Length: 265
Image (cartoon, rainbow, N blue to C red; front, side, top):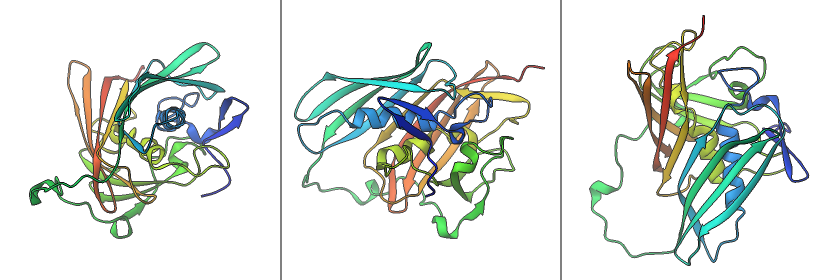
């Protein structure tokens, strides 16, 4: 990773860099980095013992500007085994994103698992054997597309349809910090609708209004794999469904509800 970062802490607030810039507007962020920043805030809530975020859902209330952001979080439901957490992300005009997360206690449990439960689906080609390729070029010289490494295991950025893509952060989420496993997943997971595009980005919008990530375990290592498929409907509603993997196997799944429309003009 370089010395650059998606965000810089400024007291209790966070200043986004141009590396957060997304594909829909040069003034707005890709939702992955701010989602990860909000998850980092939820992870900072004290826990009664070892726990893992098993499900986290983000509501994207409006486009997230590349402007200074503030965070808040609270425990909604406490307990030794499960906790429900909530958090908000705001700019100067008000709330831009909110999140809720279930955190579940972790520990050794003796389980007798059937062989079929070990690996749902075909393992993706490992990143070192996948095609190294630049991520989508959104136009500006710097943005999310320059802040991640991408390797295509199946499908193609150049052709429409389902795709299996490994992503790895080149920069830390917050300057001076190593990203947590959860934040690594979230920086990547919001790209499911992009890597599995079915409509040309030059002519159409397929913007997600939410992101829900379910994790049966946290990733190990830097690479996160998105095995993604997008289904748009002529009603203007779509869905991106993504299986999440690391190099050791499956880790969970993410879903994105999509607004589908023609670009203005």
